[in-house]
Image (tube, rainbow, N blue to C red; front, side):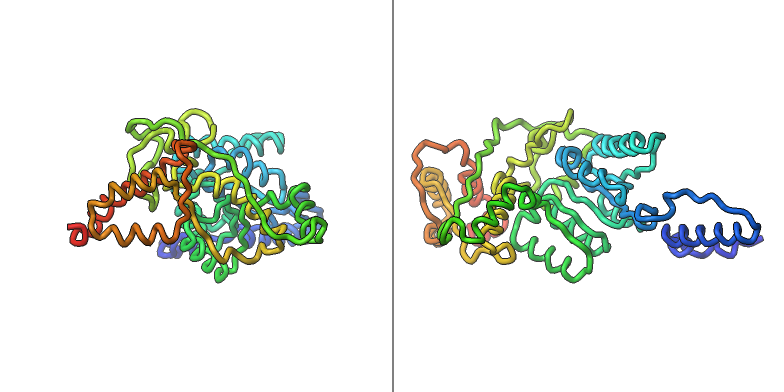
Length: 370
């Protein structure tokens, strides 16, 4: 006999989890009444923690911050169910699956193996059963995954920072505003008692008129450079680089292949802005909260260029005749700080970036640099 559903796509043939549960409950109750005896239905089917009321969550990126902070923060709530994990490192993806399965096994007192594993966030976002995502990837992937999640109508919790650039952050914000999904950034420091209390004191005038606010951050030296290394078979390094320039693989540039210590990408400017978007995302947010300006933004921004590195870079770039005008513009918009030898090693990235400008211009604009 011909199957009348043979030409129906799997997506159209299926039934949603919520509709299935609702239909099953009605059928069970109707049958019990018709047969004249009570039907035993588990208590978990009803109430605030019923499957139809749970938020099904997919975790995108299951490295150090996910395992230590984001996943434990969600797993403690019964109304949330982590049903999928995703990572470009297959080893980490499997570790993430085991972490969540073990948690539910211990909590419920019986074996659990219901967590799905994905190695591409785009496949996870196609999962219709997932209601929300936790984005715990390296910083350079935040905005793009956030945009994709919003377009897939998934609610979002995202590790700070929201983005590496103002443009991509603005784009993500605009798309989320128009997508009707909930979004939360990881600025939880403002909720801790001491920071909240300090903000209340300032906003209520307890320290007098506020004139200047300083935000202090520690340094985060990058350490020694490593030579090129073979890419581990368990890591999709090309995908990991995303929209950033192609650079050779080293373990320190990505994350440890053994354990979950602090990853090296945090100290590479093409993947993150160091402590500025690390602790700075929290401290600057706390400053905004204390000023009562957390719904606004800066009206002026300026940068510092260290004189020693700046002079060396400009000298190297001077072989390009048209670079003079650019150099003048840089000087006009930067405050030059002469720090001598102090702090030079920690700020080599400034020189490196300016020194690479010549080759970049020559590659992109060969006619101009001829």
